[in-house]
Length: 574
Image 1: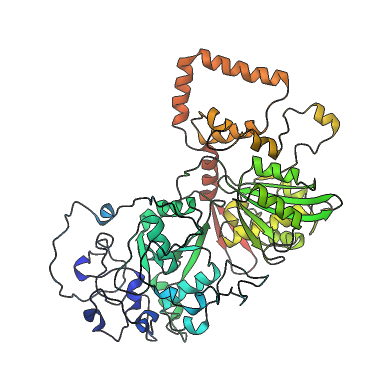
Image 2: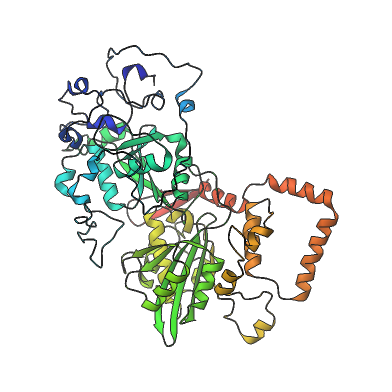
């Protein structure tokens, strides 16, 4: 590894778009736009993942780091430029400032980026009236899947190998911002680059007609969390083989130029509802839980039967339940109030019109993702088969065993009577987590819980009820939960994140037994009388990490999953 700033060599995908045969093109360019044929990238059959020498990127501070290329590059004479002080490394020169622009996801993100029409804006298959999903359905088709994109094969064949990888991944995850790993940098291309400039205050890489921006890999956590906070869905694309592994793979086989490139795969997709804090996403900026909620509905007389599954990926909790509800969806709305969802999964053509109207009126701001019945929103039988085939619930000896809670929902390979909708909702969550590459990390914790509505109890149990039952309308009208002007905001002096979450549960379930209320009052009275002790305890709590999420981190790092091609897999614990 050596410094190559003097060579003008940059370790980014921009190098792939220089034609190997056109050696004089770099000299002729002086910051103006290049021809579309060069951008499409013809490339020779022996093109590999080693960057071809190109003119220097106009992002000096970013690319003053060690080069990641595996082959040597001949020295090129360049004009001398003032040297940067050695005391200041390239990563120290890189600065990030959160954008103050108040843009909406529905706004045209191209408006602030540039007056230039980018290459992706001229592509016919991206025009609003011609866009299709990966199955060829137009946007007005009832089965149109907005999460995918149809990319013509003839267009892919004109791309360089690395850019072809990018377009293939984008076609399967069109609604996602791809953090595309090139060497020691994450790169944004085309429409993703425009988002990076508008929301992260990046600058475009100059010298081409296609939009391009990026940042060093050490800043991934900050950049990803900033976009997630603003409602984006981000995917981390990593190189999953080395150049040596690529050469071994290609040796002895008839390969094309598209094979001679290191493999890159999506390793994780993150949204507000599926945040998992680990090596890349180390710190949680929000103390309260954001849930991924799947709902399955079946019409009955006078109302509906619902199956629900809601997941808090940050701690690994998975709640399952099935219940009957009235035409106003009172029990379902109570879930929305107490377990605030960040994303709701619905089955395509699987809901009554009246139910959808209730959702629009009460939680219109919550994002909804419509899944295809059978393939994405799995049936109860497919859900059971998937859970039994995968390695979520296998021990060190590769023996399968149902978690205690899930065992109450299944009978062999079939769902128990009255549990079909709950398992159907679970299937939607499992598919979504699997598509996000989070299924093993979350499901292997086996933290399943049964959800029962508070009012779904017998009269005798209600007499012994320890908590009041608050419906959605009451919680909303009394302003109990939320950030501004609410009871929760007024009472929240908690020093720990898990304390804040517990306070929210207490507000949603107030005590109704006199002796329990008095016990809590006595505890508060003792703390108020001992100011010195209270301040000392608060000082200790202030230094505590989020213990609930820390436990999930330990579970995440302690298990190493080794997958074997086929059905079998084993789990080893360090």
